[in-house]
Image 1 (cartoon, rainbow over the protein chains, first blue to last red):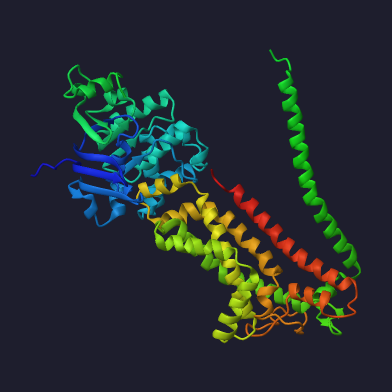
Image 2: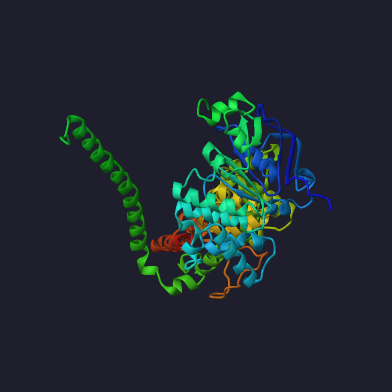
Amino acid sequence: MVTPGPMVEIADLRVRYGQREGLKGISLEVGRNEVLGIIGPAQSGKTTLLRILNRTLEDVPGIVITGSVKVDGVDVRQVKDLFALRRMIGMVSPLPVGLPLSIFDNVAFAPRMAGIRKRSELEDRVERCLRQATLWDEVKDRLHSLGTRLSGGQQQRLTIARALSHDPKILCLDEFSVAIDPVTTMRIEDMLKELRSQMAIIVATNLVQQARRLADRTAFLFNGELVEVDRTEVIFSERPASRRTYEYVNGIFG
Amino acid sequence: MFRATSLTHRKQFSEILARALFLLMTLLMVVPLLLIVGYLVYQAWPLLSLDFLLSNPKHGMRAGGIWSPLLGTVYLVVISLAIATPIGVLAAVFLNEYARDNWFTRVVNLAVVNLAGVPSIVHALFGLGAFVLFARLGRSVLAASLTLAIMTLPVIIASTKEALAAVPKAFREACWNVGATRWQTIRHIVLPNSISGILTGVILQVSRAAGETAPIMFTGAVFFKAVKEGHLLAYGLFDQCMALSMHLFTISTQVPDVPKALPYATAVVLLSTVLAVNALSIIIRVRLRARRKW
């Protein structure tokens, strides 16, 4: 039996927005059941790196992408069914986006668009995803009220439930906690720890302690360069490979 | 701590002044409108009746009703919007949802903006050349409707684009992220949340199509034509027709010895047709906005 390779393999990835270089030659791997933390200040390229994976970055006008990005062993630019690729990846954006639909329809949206019609199957899936996102108990009695009327923290969990609804193999969270309170953040973090057995998780965050709490390995991006990637204990130890990493995680610069 | 200073007094004064000024301007707009409508109805009152609506003009347009121009206007408006709405809405969906920013879309967008500002008489001449003469439709309901459609099309495109752009980009991105196609996103998220704005834009064009005289004058509307009274299918597509706007122009300026109330009554009918359609648009907008979900 062949041991499956890493979930994500990025080699010498460069991204330019016109004159500005967004990513300057990144090479990185994410294992199958690994939580990878990506830390770095604003404008360091964290969001760019995530949006490369599901190819939504290509819609940006004037963008130039070189290098190779493989998801589950397949180069994303060779993918025939772009929509299947996107279903393989759950994306959670910094600000919660409740679609203007009922709570149920928000979570059932992706499965429906993928062609699942059977009511019982949809119901099972919605319940499972809402439970995984620790939102089920709060909304189970009002699944048909509007998702956009939920509070910010609830909407972010709804967004996560939606990201899980198409059975992704990778879950990407982009600064998911910027708009929510610490208690909700902790609940989501606990949930992510449980999910790691089922999928690869990439957490981009500007809170270095969040990466420390969650990640198996942590990558430090700065100004489009990958300064260092290593086991989280090493990154947060007294002796990471780069002095800049030490200074950033200890709040000396950045 | 909360004592009023001279600054407070100045601020209070300017607040009162601003409020009064805005109220005055609002009244300045509303009062003449009410006066005009009131005067029209007052002058037209003796003539207004169902019979006036349902009978043809008679005695060289000095008596009788306005059935054939009223029906002609309804034909022109309905047919022109039936042509312009699907083309305009679909073009706007393409421009706003699919098109990338390149020279082609920039040219199209520029053309839309400029065409929306072209005077209606120019559309009239275009319609005369393109539909009446080149396409050999002759002066007909169809040629006039096509001309009106060309006139309303750029405005429909512009208003539809605006309605589509009002749907937050984040909704689209959320849909694409879960693997929905562009069309699925448009069909399930974008259109349901912009339909009220789209309809409002379209319905506002009803009053424009009903009110314009120039585009139909060369392309299909005639001074006088009697049709079967009270019969809704009285015009054919290739017939010439009468229209309210043109009829009003004719009896006000071209025909001697028209009873004084007749032009007023015609104006009231034109005005109330337009107002009725606008009221309908407001009702639809309120209904649909109540369903809006963010």
